[in-house]
Amino acid sequence: MLEITDISVAGYERVRRAVDPSRGLHALIAVHSTVLGKQADGSSRALGGMRLWPYSSLDEAKTDVLRLARGMTYKAACAGLNLGGGKSVIIGKPEDKTPAMFEAMGEFVESFGGTYITAEDVNTKVEDMAPVAKKTSHVAGLAGKSGNPSPKTAWGCFLGLQATLTEVFGSPDVAGKTVAIEGAGSVGSVYGGLIAKHGGKVIVADIRQESALRVAAATGGRVVSPTEIHSVECDVYAPCALGGSLNDETIPDLSCRAVVGAANNQLLEDRHGDALRARGIVYAPDYVVNAAGLINVYCELDPKGYDEPRSMRMAEMIRKTLAEIFAISREEGISTARAADRYAERRIEAARAEAPR
Ligand code: NAD
Image (cartoon, rainbow, N blue to C red; front, top):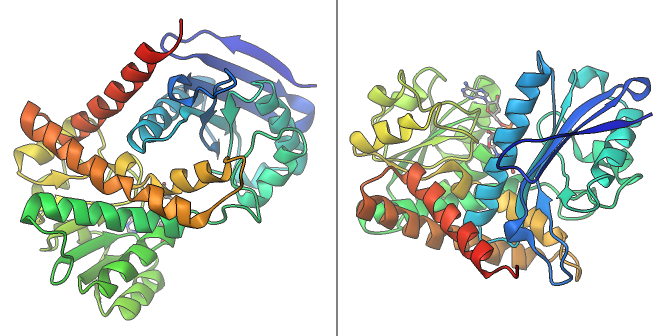
C-alpha cells in the first residue's frame, strides 16, 4: 500500500514523500511554484520530469528534488510558458525498476490532483511512463505524442547560439564560427549538424570515441579528447554532456568568447557565472538555452492537441529572452546566470501581483 506523508518546506507549495515496500517505491515529489501555471478554471499546474537515482540517503534525494523543482520554475518562466515548476525523484537503482513501481508512482502523482504533471527524465524512459499513465492522466511525453525532445532541444540551442553570437560579434551569422561540442549524444549530434549546415566549424569530443567520430564525419569537423575539448581555441564552447563543466579547473583554460550548450547545471556553483563574466566570456544560461524540450512537452498539454510547428515557433522565444538577459547582465553589472534568475523572478512576481486575492 502507498503511504504518503507531507513534508513542510519553506518556499515550496507542496512536498510529499511516498513509500510502498510491496511495489518497491520510495519517492519524493516537490511542487515549487504554480504561480505561472494558473489556468482559466482556477486550477494550477507545475511540470517536471521523474528522475530515478540511487541516492545514498533521503536527505540527498530531498535536496535534489527541491533544487530540480525550483529549476523547473525558472526554466518555464524564462521560456514564457504558462506553467509552474515541479519534479519527482525515485530512490532506487535503474536496474531494479518495474512496471509495478511505476504504477505506484502514478498513484503518487495522482495524489497531487493535477498540480504536478510528470514526464520522463534521467533513468526513466518513454515506455516507463505507460504504467504511470494507467494511474494518472497527469503525465506528458508519452509514446505517440510529442515524441523525442532532443532534436527540439538542439534547435533551441542553435537559436541560443545565434542570439549569443549577436551579443558577442554583432551578428547572428554562424558561418565561419567554430563551436567546440562536449558530448556527441542526442542533442550534441543534432546541434553539430545545424552548425555545419549554416557554415560553422565543429570540434567534438565524447567519452564514446565512436560517437565523436560519427559527428565529425557528418559535420566535416574534427575530434579532440574529452580532456581537451574545453580548452581548444574556438568561438563557442558547447557543453552537451553532463553538468558541472564550468568550474575552477576548466574556466581558466577556456579559449572561447562564449558558452552555449544543452547540458543542465553547467556551472558547478553560482560563483562560476561570475568567474566567466570576469574573464569576458559570455555565458548563455543553460536553462534558457535548453528549454525547447520543455516547450515541446508543454505543447502536448494543449487541449487542442500537440502541434509541432507551434512548438518550433514558440522556441523562437529563446533568442529574444537571451537578448533581454544579456541586457540585464550589462545594465546591472551581474553575471548572465544571475540575470536569468532575475528575469524569471520578475515574471513570477508580476504574475503573483496580478493574481486575484
Ligand atoms: P545523451 O546521453 O544522449 O548524450 C550525452 C553524451 O555525452 C553521450 O554521448 C556521452 O557519451 C557523452 N559524455 C558523457 N560524459 C562526457 C564527458 N565527460 N566528455 C565528453 N562527452 C561525455 O544526452 P542528451 O539527451 O544529448 O543530453 C545532453 C545534455 O543536455 C544533458 O545534460 C541533458 O540533461 C541536457 N538536456 C537534454 C535535453 C533533451 O531534450 N535531450 C533537454 C534539456 C537538457
